[in-house]
Image (cartoon, rainbow, N blue to C red):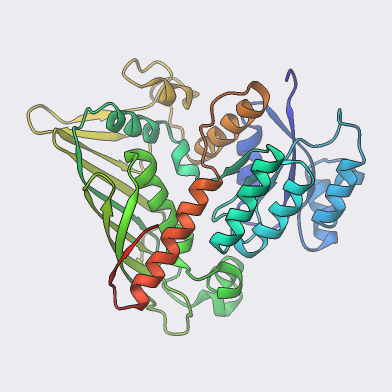
Length: 378
């Protein structure tokens, strides 16, 4: 396909949290252009957003249904190729279902849906329609996360024995949802966030990162989910013991009441020969430790000979020039675009990853409610 892919967007209007990040990431490599959108549940805000983004007025829509009808009426040479969904959790299922049924590929913010049944239905539709679906677990896009995966897969660390992964934030340490803070309001509302706040919002990122880097599956778990802010319905802190598919053991912590922490996602993987450590707030350093030789600090850069090809392909700059959050997001969009345009292998999180994430969330809630018993993660 010798042209840019044309992207539509649902959500991400003026005042939204993550929509602008997706727009910057999608267009970073010059492979994708935003051509239309239904940016808000308010048609007025959607129109205003489209104007801000210099879109054609007749391609800024007041609803998803209006956008699908409008785009389907255009010739194939002009209509959008895929849609990026950047709305709150509870809207994902119906919006993604409508978009897939209309014949368009989908990129969707995580979690994929509220329930496993909804996600499995989306998987069935995508397969029937032969459409791609990317779930934006964006941390898998970092070059050194791909390098960490490579070190594990090639056996450099030996058999994996233990994994510790944590994701700490402090922004929900007080009941800010009661003051009308938009992001807190829907994330702490079971009708909009689902059965979990902390585990569903950030614990699922930790789960996904663990399985992506190690290639192992979480086979069973023992979870203790807590709600420290008294007026809150859903969990804001969690501690989980894990058993992994090769016999290794793991620990996952996630908290949104860790006062002073901003976005501390960290993973440590311990093998028979060595270990690795990566921290999202210092994403350009992968610490690799050995029992019998000095510790290494691996860094990204298109000129770094020791990086695997997947890690190099995720870099854009020479050594010493930091790349970060936007670029990691962009790597998912770049891989998604290449898969559509060039039939390249899929290198982005899929519906199947989303279903595993939902199963993990459900089993954590189940374990915690039953007194932190061990439950199978299947």
